[in-house]
View: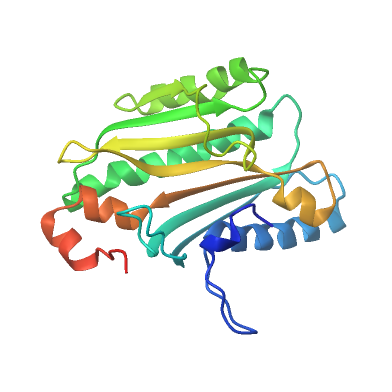
Length: 230
């Protein structure tokens, strides 16, 4: 369903599998629930929102030091129908980004120090939806999260061909001063492909909970839960 290189996925024996990306599994469930909604109402706009905290496993990347072979992540999926005027896309984007930012804000109570949070949004339609994204995503989020920096990233290269229409990235500065990616997301065609319906829309995103704990948490947090490359 996804375009991830097969070399990243750990193959298992028949009837079993390990999960390389929780959003793939959530997308399948989103498609099942949207199919049921469409059977009752072929033009249903009711959204399906799913989330999971899951430990994912990937093949070890020896050429990329610091990349873990298994780690815990928060995955989000929002599925629905095209509502016209890029309305589904902008509201779903603002909602999912808000969930991630609320989480980053709440971990301060646990002693985590997440500073200089930055959210970048990329319009993958050659600027066609840039104004709508600014007015309905960046501007409202700037008002709701004044301590977070929001901007467009027109130079982003990662995710092109994987995401469509729009995508986003969340970065922050660690207590040690390192600039790290914590979250990423965008629109994919998975539910449209699974249901054979070009009107279906799906937004996925993930946040690295283990990286958050290891690199932004108090020393005890990183010592106890950090899973390092094998």
